[in-house]
Length: 90
Image 1 (cartoon, rainbow, N blue to C red):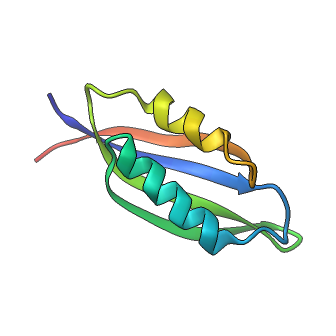
Image 2 (cartoon, one colour; image 1 turned 180 degrees about the horizontal axis):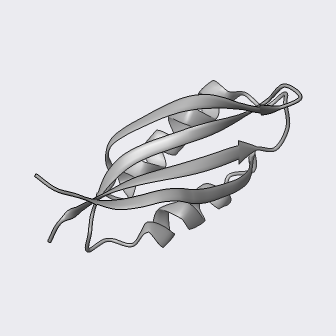
Image 3 (cartoon, rainbow, N blue to C red; image 1 turned 90 degrees about the vertical axis):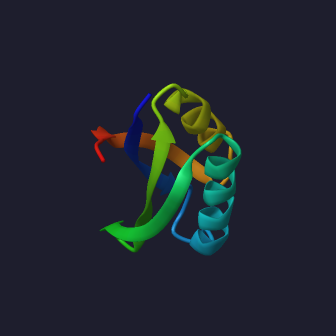
């Protein structure tokens, strides 16, 4: 099996949401569900709202839906959308 590189855009509930805490939770969930080498960064959206961009590697045999569904369960998150999904070579 191969490896896929996944990018998920996570939108917080509000401008006041603690992005640092969400980033730690997101990395933990990713690790628990089989994701490797996860990184996060923030990206400005509008009116002071920042999105979290999560990047990680995942074994091709595992489902991305497990991670995405678990992220959506967090109360501080408004949405979690896969914005890039590609097979890695090498």
